[in-house]
Length: 479
Image (cartoon, rainbow, N blue to C red; front, top):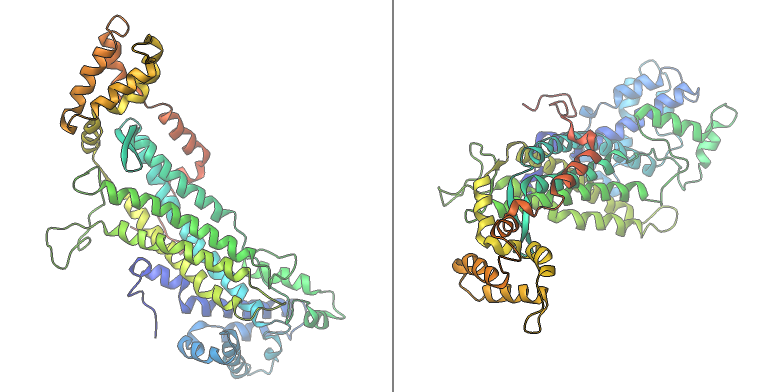
């Protein structure tokens, strides 16, 4: 039975399936075994021609992943039944009696192969993930620059706080995604080696009398597979896994922030943003007029799962007992693969969202104007309170707070006019001329360093602000 993503539509895509599905894991395990055979032959530790036979036998299409999964219950991991099948295929293909079977899995243990295979799966997935993240950040950088002066309202604890710009909001989205992308770029995907108990005892016997060592073989395997060399076996030291989990969770955290904002700002009563439209997207089974923000909903579903999956990797790492664990290792596999699938699936949706996001400056201005001049109370207080003399036992700051408090007692529709009236009464024109008062009540005058913050954010991640090639990790056009 294949998991097609029926209950996880965020990751139901051909690319996600191809890079993280059972077939991808199976192919990665076979790639490790084939790569090891090539390393042994090159080192003179396997018969000439053995690697070619193993490579032919290691074609993933020869194997039934569902059958291997069922048989994996016998030994606790899929490497064991797959090895049995691989050896049969090698024997059948070794018509020239090259002794290719001697090159299969020699001196390795199941954890060496599966850990290394999962690093291959992760590396390939992260390459595709980074391509989508850079597409997203390029779009967000463009939004930040295009809307550098587009006024909107900032919100804190659900309430209007201060004037803001949509450019700064897009820049902050950019920063989250770019920072997570940098985590991914800095990851290493190390080869695993160690043998049955992490001592390389079998590898030492294998290389006895040759110029090779177990360490040189491991480095050669890393080079063969395009992975990072490891200074020592890491059977029970799981930083490679938890670091990967952390980076993937960071991607989903940053994505979750973006879509949480979009979900709120695209509500009809808010009307500041809208998702890009596509035929058949956002439909309701009962209400034909609805345009549900499905991209954001799907991404949020992934983001809400990320922390639990990353925590599972840490729980497993903290319980890797002895020199080979009894169950903790096994709990990593589904959590890691689900994180990879969710992050890659969500990244494609966030990219589409960012590249096609509809921005409505007039809606932003309308919501900004709801609070009226009250939104500038902080700036007014800072500029005006030092100009006021003490009155009725109140200093300037307290007088202006009293104006705000009295204004808030008026009905919401009357608060803008009430604030202006009370403020003018509390601050004589001789102290604050009308022209200066209007300047203070202009939202564009109280944006602080919004433009400079945006500029600094984009400058900090120049490689994420530039447009990537419009292709996926396999070179296929995304158009």
